Image 1 (cartoon, rainbow, N blue to C red):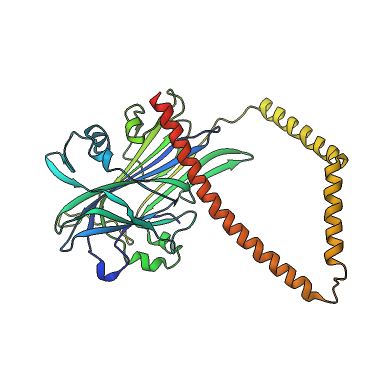
Image 2 (cartoon, rainbow, N blue to C red):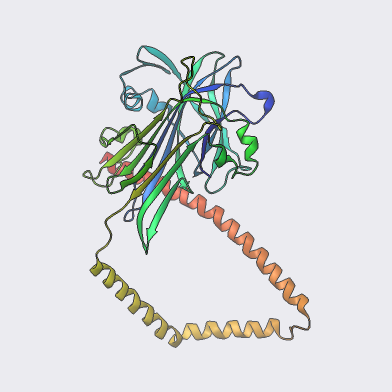
Length: 382
């Protein structure tokens, strides 16, 4: 699923029918340990205009697998990082920032009151109910920004492979897209809660060694990221080496202008879709590939010829054969119930084990990514 949207709360009685005046999306492809592995972060900023009812809860549809989030309120009330985020001079007074002589209330997102919906979320899609620490009052405007470490990229970021090597990646971001919601269980109920978006800005940061092959629509601009300036915002170095660079691709959509001068809102009937195909040219040399293949072949042949001669292999094989003869002697096709019961029990055990292992793997990956981010912060400090 590639649905990226802002939704009202699930309970119909508690809905506030707010509108989203600005929607900011930052997808970061950052360096990670291990060759050309990448670590992904998704930053989402939402500027909300409340109607007659205060807004205290907002639901975010995230097209990635996520386990936790981080409120970026401290970054927003820091004049230096806030200036980078909004690309203008910013003055700050407590939780009110001034942009172009316009005050904007910045709200915290409660980590205690916010939760992920297990009914809709899976390995590659997350539905988060975000609780604001202080509500946006009726007829007022407020802004919040959160960060999601990505544990599963799904179809939004797909690596392309040629033989054993990565040859590129495709990025498919769809803001308020009804076709993406159709792939989600009870997705029609989610579409009823999608709020209109007046303006959207999407930034995708990729390494310089990935070049763009095709893109739709055309980016508003492409530039180099000022890595040193964004270290404080990211709490880490964007790349392992200072000479490495990130390229910024920026798309914006103000909606189609209507006769009255207003802009048509982004919604399920008028989604904002961003697609880009990136290529990777450089691969290991032929000599490196030949040497690696030869080493793997030698190790594999050595294991094949040496394992049968090991004493522990003979002992293990004898134990398996003896156990089989002890517990399954007398079983035959004449009594197939035994086989059906055994196969059914084995299948159930396999499914439960696979499910538990998958959840454990997701949690383990999230912990690994957190530890990896802490190590990058240490390198940044040094």
